[in-house]
Amino acid sequence: MTTLIANELRKLRTIRGPWLLLAGGPVLVIVGVAGEVAGGADLTQPQTAIHAVAHAGVVSLLALIFGITAVAASAGTRPSPTPTWPPHAAAA
Image (cartoon, rainbow, N blue to C red):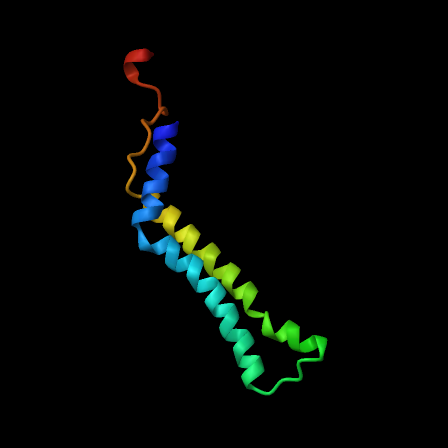
């Protein structure tokens, strides 16, 4: 089990994709907040905060899509299990 965990940690350390995904989320939210502030929004209104962090939902959706794509792509490279149906003729 420790070998599997070590392999996953090594994969995270050597592949750029997860790090780009982790860095992209906060950057998108910061850009949204900066856009509200640069647009001259009234920072005393609660509605401004709602508009400023509205990108957080988009970030979550993008992370979900990338995660599904990564799992689906890796599942295609693994060998499939041995089929158990129909039973072998020799067993009958």
